[in-house]
Structure formats: structure tokens, C-alpha cells
Length: 273
Length: 169
Ligand SMILES: Cc1cc2nc3c(=O)[nH]c(=O)nc-3n(C[C@H](O)[C@H](O)[C@H](O)COP(=O)(O)OP(=O)(O)OC[C@H]3O[C@@H](n4cnc5c(N)ncnc54)[C@H](O)[C@@H]3O)c2cc1C
Ligand code: FES
Ligand code: FES
Image 1 (cartoon, rainbow over the protein chains, first blue to last red):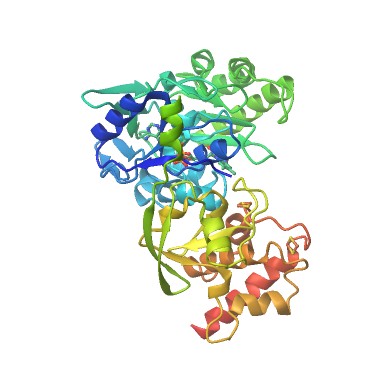
Image 2 (image 1 turned 180 degrees about the horizontal axis):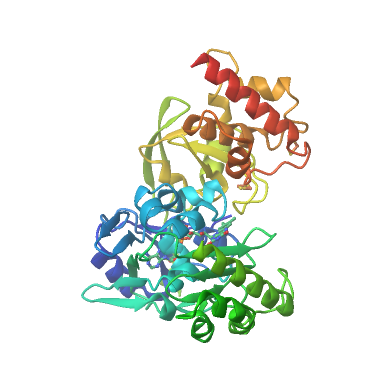
């Protein structure tokens, strides 16, 4: 059961931000609602007002410019999994999107909602960190860029301010096609471990938030194929520790660290192939 | 606090004009009302079921503009200007849809609780991909859970219906 709330339906980002500023903690952005409504039904959070952002124009487009793809925060997973631009420019992200949740969640759930909710067992954040993506956020009268690797603070916690709206995600396109990979593993509803390789190396799902692992990158970057392959096990161990894995329903800390190593090895091979 | 509570309980009414199983409906809903409750309790169509209530099982599946959604977690106002299909709207002129017929002929259900959602999801799949491979079918349908059949008969039913629908088309 959902408790009663009021609905606001602003038409612009400035109005959204103004409403969030005016009503503070009693209001929240509502996009697809696939996370928010669950949390409200469970009584984990309560809001007097939801601010429906789906009438704001220009936030559900995918545009390709020189070296990057810009994705509107309101793009649904379904839009992304069927996007020709993603097929061509960011195949690893397209593949990831095809395997998020189930067909009904992909139909209404947005990429912006996924990132802003910062649920630990989520896929896109990890790959976006590896791709060196930038998150564009706006308030009534200001705009800023947050590197994906700086966006995720903790479980369910992001760098977003209360009256700030995520509007776009700008993703650099890897030079040669196929030079990036995201692999996940899990047997529950949501993924238990995710590993991504592109410009950077990132791990997610195992701990509270997705993380870039620069120390593991150093073991692989600029190395000959043989040398990099020799270093893979060590890189995997480093990434496993950096994942800050916790023991939970998905598995023990040791188990998840091991899986990080396995996925890293496979992702590396896939990125090279 | 008192002020917040009054504000909280003031009812806000949203006019919703939408097509349900091909017929235009004009209703009013409050923002927090869920599509599943409106369809089952106000409009009396009880084919869609509430089971997990967390978007996992698919028993509440409805098609909105031809695409599957979890009605258990969809706000009713979201169907403004849209077209909603429930299992009750699938048969035409008293004649069962090929998917319904195939589920009967191939034993695609036992208790039947998952079946309305299964058939609607399968319809969405076949409308966009009339000739799916078994892998494509499994990928599309993996969010619809059945506790009885073990899925084999469901897959057979959908494949059989797909074949019939292709012949007809
Ligand atoms: C059954 C199930 C399985 C799932 N499996 C996976 C999985 O395998 N992998 C995966 O990655 N994810 C998974 N998810 C998560 C899914 O991707 C998210 O539910 C979805 O993307 C959230 O988007 P939304 O638009 O519905 O967000 P909402 O529920 O509308 O919002 C979520 C939060 O983000 C805030 N928000 C939304 N948009 C913005 C914005 N533009 N600016 C600022 N704040 C905003 C809201 O205020 C809210 O706090 C699963 C979810 C479910 C229910
Ligand atoms: S009841 Fe809605 S998905 Fe299970
Ligand atoms: S037939 Fe009983 S749940 Fe599927």
C-alpha cells in the first residue's frame, strides 16, 4: 500500500530544482518509480510530494557528437538497449542494458534513477566509471559536471545535492570498437559482482558503491599483452580488495573477492578480443 | 507538523482518460493509487494478480501501449492518454487469442495464477519478434515466474502460438 502524497508536474529543470529546494526533505524526484515506489510501499521512506520529472523535455534523448555519446537521464533501460547509437558506439553499455533487471523494469526504469538511487547491486555505475563518463547536474541557476568515479559516495548516497537534478550523462567513446567490457555474476534478482574495463578499471556490486581501481589499472596499462596477462592475477587480487566486498546474502567477502578476480580476467580477454 | 498532516490528507484528483481493452475510459485517480488496484477494484478486471508486489514475478503484468509493465508498481495516473490491455481484452469476438489457445492445448498452465501475465508478456514479445529463438524467448520471459509448470510447457505453448500466428499473418 502506498500512502497518500501530492504530485507536482513541472515542465523545466529549473522548476524541478525550485520545488525540491522549497519542500526540502518532504519532496523527492519521481522518474520511473521502480525503486522509489518500492521503498515507499515498504515504508522505508515517506514523502509528502513527488516531483514527476517526465514532463521535462530534452532529457530522454541520446545524441552522438565527435568523441562522445550524451544520454539523457530520463532515458529508460529499454530505450538504451534498443538504441542504434549505443550498438554502434558503446556496445558494452548496450549489452549491459539488455541484462538489467527484467523487461518490465527496463520498460519504465531510467538510467538517471538507477544512478541517483545508488543501490549497491546496480550495473551501469561500474561501466560508466570505467568509461570515464561525466554526469551533468543542474539546479535552478547553476550546472556542474561530476566525474562518474566521484558520484557514488556510499550505498544509496551520491554527490547530488538535495535540489540538484541529474540531467545528462556524457560518455566518451572508446577509440576502437569492442575495447571495453562489462561482466557481472549473480544468482539472485540483482547482480552480486560486476567488473568493467575500458579507459579505467572498475568494480561494483560487491561492496557499498562502485569504485575505480587505479592500482590495478597500473598493472595492465601500457604493458605488452604477455606482461599484462602475467599481472592479471595480481590485478584481480588488488581489485578484489578495492571492491570493499561485504559478506551478505550474495556470498562471503572472500567469495566475492575471488569472483572479482575471475571476472577481471575474462573482461580483460573480452576487451582485447 | 499539524499543518503538514492536513496538507498530506487533502485529496488531489487527477483526470485520467485512457483506453482499456479498446474502450475509452474517463476516470479520476489520486496520485498514490496503483494501476493494479484501479484495474482490479474499480474497474473489476481481476485477471492481473498481485503476488510479489516488488516487480519480480510478473503476475500483475499489463500491456501499456503494447509493452509489459508491473501494474503492482505503476501509478495509475501514468496511463493518461495511453492504451492498456489486460488479459480480459485479448480474445476477439469470443474467439481466444492464439496464445490462449496454445496454452490450453499444450498444458501451459496448472494453477493459472501466473498465466494472465505470462500470456500478455508473450504477446508483447511476439508482436515485436514474431519468430523468436528459444534463447530470445527465455531472455524476454525471465521476469515472469511460474511455480507450477517448470516452464517447459510454457515455452512450448508460446513457440506453438508463434508458429500459428506466423502462418496466419
Ligand atoms: C526487480 C528489480 C530488479 C532490478 N535489477 C537490476 C539489475 O540487474 N541491474 C541494475 O543495474 N539495476 C537493477 N534494478 C534497478 C533499476 O535499474 C532501477 O530500478 C531503475 O533504473 C530506477 O530508475 P527509475 O526511473 O525507476 O527511478 P525512480 O524510482 O523514479 O528514482 C530512484 C531514485 O532516484 C532519484 N532520481 C531519479 N531520477 C533522478 C534525476 N534525474 N535527478 C535526481 N534524482 C533522480 C529519485 O528521487 C529516487 O530517489 C532492478 C530493479 C528492480 C525493481
Ligand atoms: S506482483 Fe507485480 S511483479 Fe509480482
Ligand atoms: S501455473 Fe501456477 S504459477 Fe504458473
